[in-house]
Length: 206
Image (cartoon, rainbow, N blue to C red):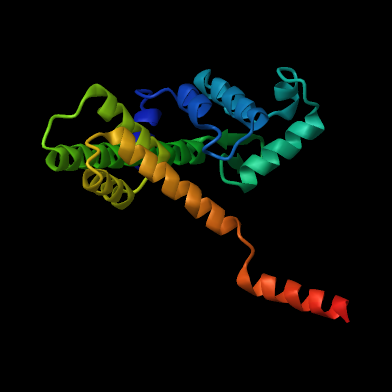
């Protein structure tokens, strides 16, 4: 259990809000998300009995479809079912742990992005020997969002310096051009496949 899971269990972070914002990252569709929201609504009101008939009253799905959905959520580890002689109760602890993991990974990625941006800014200011403009900073943020590597960026900035173009717009054009060339190379026919096609053409000529 990570810190995010603890914060959700203590209601510091809203489970409903975290679920709505991250259900796609959790591998859920809108229907299963709605089911989980309804189950959490029951939990909030101290009702942990699992009843497909009660859920059907709140949804456009029939009981059969709801049962299939609940089974899917159980098998994929979003909810737990506790069965005794008199009743079936459910727990959303697995869902909370999954959401906690997603939030932790998101925080880690954001931290990495900040570190990358800071390193790029320092490198560019060192290479260009000047403070970067607002436009420059926007370009760097765009690079980070697009997932360009630090090596790609540093290479483009260095090449712009060699070309005596002391701005990041030129460096951006270099990166875009290299990406486009790489895409075209990948689109070319594989040499082995080309050889097979050549043999086929030779046979046809006979």
